[in-house]
Length: 324
Image (tube, rainbow, N blue to C red; front, side, top):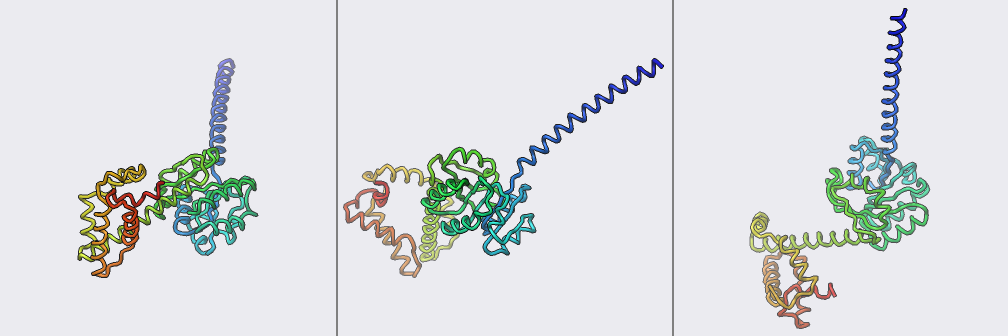
C-alpha cells in the first residue's frame, strides 16, 4: 500500500507538471494567434489600372485581405480570381477597411471617388493616395479629410506595373511625421524604398512631378538623338554603342551643381558654340525630314540668351532664369 501511495504521488505530480506545461503552451499559442490576427488589416483599393491591379496582386500574395473597386467593374471583378473581393460601388468597397489606397488619374477623379466613397468610411480610416496630382490638390485634400475626422496621406510613386507586382521601385511621402510613422510598415511592404521627405505637406507631390519632368525631358532627348542618328543612316544599335564608352550620366551631378550655383562665366562649352552645333543638328535632321522635339526649343532659348549678351558664357546659362 505504501508503495502504491508513493507511486501515485509521483504520478499525480507528473500529471500536474504536464498539465501546467500544456497550459503555458496554450497561452503562448493563443497570444501569438491573437497578435497575428490583430496585425491583419482590411485594405481597400480604388482604381484597378495597370498599377493598382498589380499592387493588389502583390498584397494578396502576402496574404492580405483586399476589397477592390474600379469604374470599369470588369477590371475589379477580374481580381477575384486572385483572392480579392470586388464591389460595384466605391462606398461598398471601403466598408470595414482600415486603410484605403487610390491609384486614379488626376485631382478631379480623386476628389470624385473619395466623395462617392465617403459614406462607407470607417471612423478614422487612413486614406493613402498614390495618384500623381497637383501639389495644391494634395495639400487641400490633406486638410479637408483631416477636418472630417479621417487621415489623408499622399504617397506618389516612381513605380511601373512590374514594380508594383514585385514591390520594387520608390514611394515618396511627406507631411505629418506621426501619420507617416503609423503607415511606414505597411507602405514599406509595397515598394523597394520608402522615402520620407520630411514634414512639408506637398513636397512628395512636387518631387514626383519633378522626377516625371526629368523622365519626359530624357525621353524627348533620346527621341531627338535617334532622329538625328536616322538622318545620318545610323542605327539605334550605333547610338547604344556610343553610350558604352561615353557615359553622360556621370556628367549630370557636376552639370546640375554648376547650374544651381549660377557659375556661367567660366565656360567649358561656350553658348555661341553650342548654338552652332544645335544649328548643324537641325539642318541635318531637316534634310532627311527627321523630326526633332527638343532641340528647336533649346535653340530658341539659346538665341534669347545670346541676344542678352551671354554668348561667351557657358551654355548652361540658358538655365539662368530658372535659378534666380
